Image (cartoon, rainbow, N blue to C red; front, side):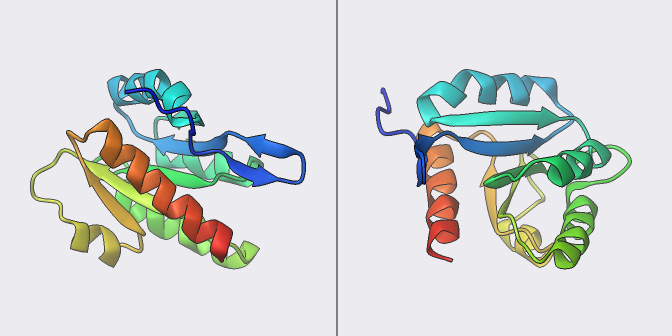
Length: 142
């Protein structure tokens, strides 16, 4: 199925691709997002851990963060706490979607960790597109 609309949102210069930060230690998941990025109308910026994710968030303004739940050193819940602390100082908030294939992680656990949403692996193209669209709309209304 071809997505001709994409998820691009308007700015003063017309349309742009969404900038999505993917914090995930699994390179295969990142490659999947690279393959889907054109159909989704996004630019995926991939990093392998929380430290790299924090550095990226300090440099660029992302529309959405997709956060792996299980990562070595700093897991997704702890990384989200670090991001939220940094954002409190900056006075902004970026939607974070928790992403995991780990069966024991629930949407409620992600929300309790101060993430905004949850996406279970495996997911469909439509599920991913829907999650991204939802949070882009929330941001543009806020």
